[in-house]
Amino acid sequence: MIATEPSGLDQLLAEHCADIAALARHLRDVIVEARPELTERVYSGWHGLGFHHPEQGYVAAIFPGTDSVSVGFEHGADLPDPHGLLQGTGKRLRYLHFTVDGSAPTHEHLVEYLDLAVT
Image (cartoon, rainbow, N blue to C red):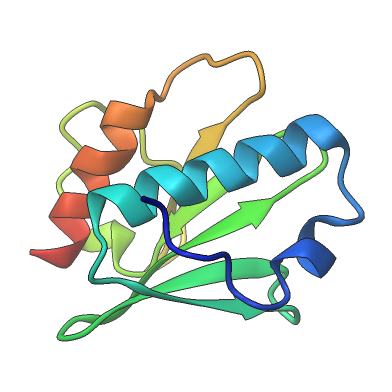
């Protein structure tokens, strides 16, 4: 069973096409199912849905875009990148970018990187 969507998620996704909104919701479901200990919060200023671990704090967020959905990892620059999928050049954040066509990364990759972020 997937947890109830957080308040504000509908408003966050309202400006996106149906495919991007559905992809963002699906990625949210993958994260919540893989890591039910995470809590969620919509950050309208960041235009994202953040995930918090009880011990690690803020670990990741979903950011819907025009033609893709990114999952950002707060300490992604410090994460191992076993598949070479993390994107970004900042000092801290790294992202996995998901497209509607289902090209790499896969949902299994998302769970693997999420596990790396919370351990």
